[in-house]
Image (cartoon, rainbow, N blue to C red; front, side, top):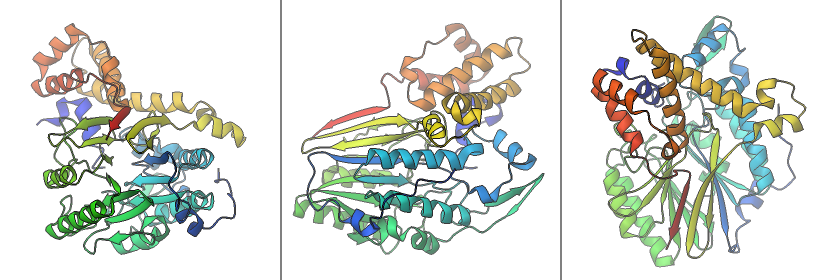
Amino acid sequence: MNMKTIPALQIICSLALSGSLLSGCTASSKTAAAALEEQPDTLNIAVATDLHFLSSSLTDHGSAFEKYITNSDGKTMEYSEELVDAFLSEVIAEKPHVLVLTGDLTYNGEKQSHVDLSRKLQAVEDAGIQVCVIPGNHDMYNKYAVSFSGDSYSSTDTVTSEEFEELYSDYGYSEALARDPDSLSYVYQCSPSTRLLFVDVNASEYYNTISDSTLQWIEEQLQQAQQDGVKVIGFSHQNMLRQSIFGTGFVIENASSLEKLYEQYGVLANFSGHLHIQHTKTGTHNVPEAVTSSLAVSPNQYAEISLTDSTLDYATKSVDVSAWAKANNKTDENLLNFSTYSKTFFDDNSYRTAYEDYESLDNVEEIAEYFTMLNNAYFQGRASTLTFNSALNNQINQFDDNLSTYIISIRQEKTDMNVMHIDF
C-alpha cells in the first residue's frame, strides 16, 4: 500500500507508531477498594484510553516540541497536563464506582510521565473511586521516550513491565483477585456480582498475542466466575474485533481465541482503545466491543458504562476542559475554548497532510477540506451523519483505489458509534 497517496489513512496508521489536580479528601486507596462490598443498583464505570500523557517536566514547549506535535496525528499534546487534570477532576466530581484506563497512559513510555500520572491518580482513589489500569503499546520499553528542550530533544528513561506494575500497584494490581504470571493481565472484583478481566498483550513475551498459558489462565478465571455466578466485563488495549479496514497491529493477533472464550462463558462485552477512532461492533461470536477514542484527540472523550442486573449501557462524553479552566482561573484562550482549539488542531493536521499529497490537483483545497470533514466525523464515531460528495468520491476513486476503499468503509457506517446497549 502506498501510504503517501492516502492522507486519511496516513493519519490513522501513525497512531500506533508514533494546573495541579484538586487535593481530594482523606480516604485511603484501601477505602476505594472496599467501597463496593455491597452491590449497587447500578454499577458505574468510567473508561478512558490513550491518554498519551506527557509530564510537563519533559518539555519547555520550544521549537522541537512544537515541530514534533504539529507533524503528529492530532493529539493535543500542547495541553497534555491540563487535559488530564480536567479529566480526573471531572471523574472525581461524577463519582463512578471505578475508573478504568485501557493503556497508552503515556506519550511514549517516559518514566517521568508514568510517575507523574500515578501521583495524579491517587487523588481519584482518595475520593473513594477505585482506579484500574493496563499498559498499552506505548507504555513500556519505548525507545522513543524523549524530553524536549529548545530546538532539540534527547532520550529519557522509559519503564520495564516490572516498573510499570510497581508504579501502578495501587491501581488494580495490588487489589487483583487473580494475576496472570506471564503478562500484566488480572481480574478485579468490581462488585459482589461483577468482575473486570484485564487482558494485556504488551508485557508478555509474545507482543500483541495472547500466549497459550495466558489463554489457559483466562479460561480458568472465566470458569471460576461462572461457578461463582458473577458477570464478567473484558478490557484490553488492542482490539478484540477488527473494527475498521485497519487490522494488522490494531487487533490482537489471536483475538478469535479470546472471542470464543468470551462467547462460551458469557462475557458481557469487551472495551478497548488503541485505534484512536470511536467505534463499536459485535463480532461473529456475538460478543460486542466498544473502542473508545483517544482522550488526547478531538473531541477528547471518555465513556461511561452503566451496569444493572439485566442491562449494560455505554455512552461517550467529552471532557469539559473549558469549565475546568474557568474554575481554576486559567487565562489561556485555548483552554477557555478547548473544544474549538482541539478540533481545529486535529483538522489542521488532516488538511495539511491531504493538501501535501494532492497539491498537483486543481481542486486540492476542496479535496483537503472534504477529507478533513471525513476524518473528523470518522474519528468521532459519527460518520453516519455525513453527507458525501459523489463528484469528489468519483474523482478520488479514479485517483487511487486504496483511498476509495477508505471512503467506502466510512460510507458503510450506519449508526452512532458513541452508544451501545446490551440486554442480557
